[in-house]
Image (tube, rainbow over all chains, first blue to last red; front, side, top):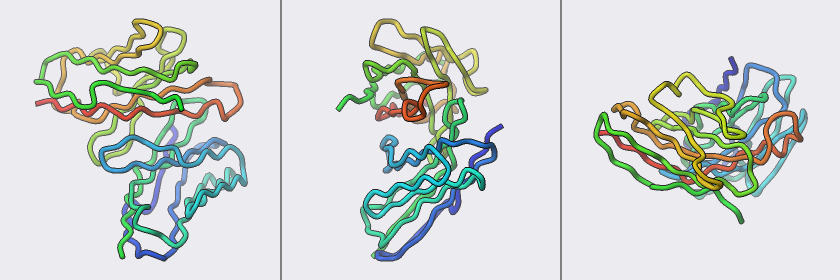
Length: 109
Length: 119
């Protein structure tokens, strides 16, 4: 059974600081997704990572995938309040998506 | 840009009642999914649907649940006799292709969700 673990589950960070969210998964896969969810809203696709060593960047967010370590990271650079949300990673191995528990990020002044 | 739509946005029902949640997937997509998210928890897979039949389902998707594609555009989730623990946000998603195709085609696009409250 595929398990997806995220940490931390809660993250409070100051504006302007950097931090990394980690996503570990238990079974080999080369497809990993990051989603953002605002309270009461749907899931917004942020990144699709398709192969070992994939790195994608959008604004202050950068995601990477290491399939050998079964690890993906979401790095936040110089956080701003607008990034406050819950971030989910999700993995699939020819099955429907299996999500992590999410990281609730709060960016404070 | 094409998007997945869902109705209603919020449904309140009494325990034991039947509910039908509706979704209109993106028009050229072939795979359809239902997920649910209990408040404050992670998103969980319920069922996937392809070629007018269920392709996979989770343990959550028991005999109380059913899915249907009644016409060329709608995809529905029915809960026959709702329980308090069915209260959750239900998300519909669709993707163009599924297994054994280029990975980009796997990307699932999520609808805005239906918040189901069972009282």
